[in-house]
Length: 111
Length: 118
Image 1: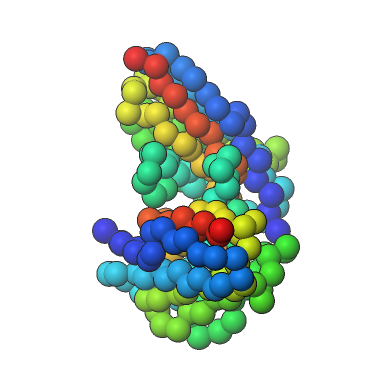
Image 2 (image 1 turned 90 degrees about the horizontal axis):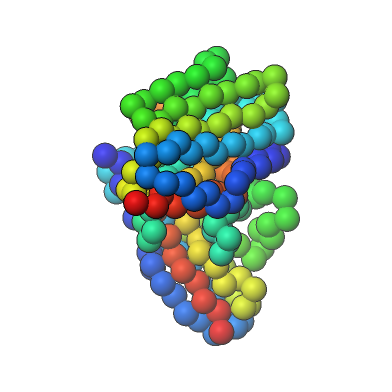
């Protein structure tokens, strides 16, 4: 099956700084890459996604980039705020059949 | 929005007993539901894909006889941990993708179930 690796496992930034989380995947057939945010004690929720026919997608302060050749994709959060503190998961899937998640990144935004 | 409900949220059982966890889609139908195990270091490990009306498909290394999955209807999937042992203690979480939103790919997660085997 697919193997998704995610780095770093923890990330601490100062409020207002940018945060970048990186993921790699192994199956070149994967064509959809979502990012989920899980706040403490809550269920994961989709924050942004990208399909394989797109190289970049942006939604306000968050953006995702995809490099199909290198099989890696990244989440970028700009102007971080304390409420961005959470665990972030990347995932990869081929046609939504199965979703394989990365190991998660615990982001801590210090006020 | 789409809501997935999971029950029980917490369960403690003795070693050797079986535990059933339910995953329900409350306001949509799902032919497919996914069962994950979330480890203490945060990772979501896909255990199996539950398919309505057919057998579940298990990921490599997951014992199908130990983790029985039944997807009896378009709104309910159950995971039964049979003959549970302390090493089965974990957080189990289900997710589903609404039929009508298949092209969006968004997964909706249950609240998760914390299993502790004594």
